[in-house]
Amino acid sequence: MKEVRVRFAPSPTGYLHIGGLRTALYNYLYAKKNGGKFLLRIEDTDRTRYVEGAIENLIESLEWAGITHDEGVFVKDGEIVDVGDAGPYIQSQRLPIYQKYVDELIEKGHAYYCFCTKDRLDSLREEQRIKGQVPKYDGLCRSIPIEEAKKRIEAGEEYVVRLKLPKDKNITFNDAVRGKVTINTDEIDDQVLMKSDGFPTYHLAVIVDDHLMDITHIVRGEEWLASTPKHVYLYECFGWEAPEFVHLPTVLNKDRKKLSKRQGDVSVEDFRNRGYLPEGLVNYLALVGWSPEDGEEIMTLDEMVEKFSFDRVGKSGGIFDTDKLNWVNSHYIKSYDLDKLAELSIPFVVKSGLITEEEIRNNFEWYKVLIDTVREGIDKLEDIPEHISFLFGDIEITEDAAKEELQAEHVPALLDSFIKIVKSHDEIDLEVAKGLMKEVQKDSGVKGKALYMPTRAAISGNVHGPDMSNIIYLLGKDKLIERAEKIKNSL
Ligand code: GLU
Figure (cartoon, helix red, strand yellow):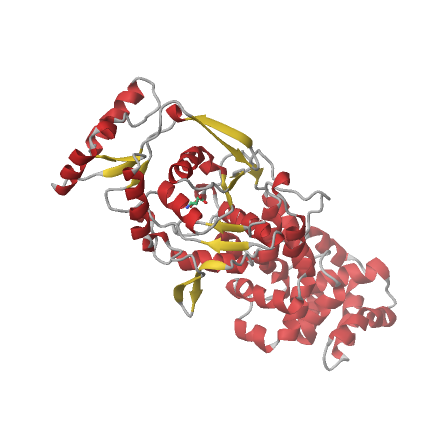
């Protein structure tokens, strides 16, 4: 069997859309599952949409997500480089290649020069719109004899090259998700293949590159499904074998509309900046449009590779559900390597202003306990500050329930005992913290809820929260005394 070769072919328009990451992921999974290769190609033939730094950004987002490619465009030592034998992998560096193939199409009579001006095309479109027709090129330049066309080009006239589609021909291809698709050429436009600036359009470049790069499966968003018949016809014109087509359902929001930047987070960077872990985001995205046969939802990348197949990709749009993303991500937060999680969390905590990076670095073991203490209750790293703020600054009794607990008659004596026990230790390390409440119990004679609730309220301001011994350790001797005294004096 031929080696599987798939590609992700984004346009460098500024950022990696979450739907793009899912396309890259499915390509990656399929390549790995079949021992094949995954390529990254940059489709930058639309110069009006080019954004500086976008290629680096794309590669960096893919790397962050762990979706690594084998061939194509890479960044090495700050430079964009090609790796592989089928390059260049950036389309703007392949112009002579496209020119050669356009010339071949013209020669074979499958394409023609078109001299229609923008004004003519605009008024044609307007006329068709008024008549309620689908806007379509009317084929005016199809019949210009090639010699005449060449003379006009020599004389300096502006032109594009269009595909000469045969009339009333059914084009059929198989899509791994949609099944058999047939479209009649009368419903399709004579697509521009080469623009007046000498750049090919996507439609020409994509088929030339997929052929020359030996791509076996085209896995991409379903917005390209309607263009596929033109591509299939082009393969026919060149006498090339077309790859397999796999069009993935669009990633939709809860209102079943395309996820768009206007409604909030759509780029991989947005999710990264909110503290989603790469493993969580990728695991969740895999499930938007696909599910493994065993119904498992939490999977490592390797497990996904093992279970992946196109027959379990759904036809209808995949709904992006933030609650579910949070649920999946929280699973990874809970089980993540603590050192790594602590390291990743630093920018989020520092940004909140509660503590400086230097303080964190100087007390890293303490900081790890802090992160370990709150990770149970959070979905993503940006949630951390609100869960730890009670440990910083002055004690504030925020909950009515906490105020109530502190009203009980035995509380002043209990807090006295608590302060006495804390003072009896040189330092409150984890060991001491673990046994501290037992000591207070012995000393005060108060037990159970009557012991824990008011003490928790007095040192944290709340009646609920993380494990008491962790709070005791994290606050440390001075703060424990300061807080307990302040509350006691306020009673
Ligand atoms: N350059 C296209 C995009 O930005 C890729 C389409 C394809 O994979 O063929 O989505």
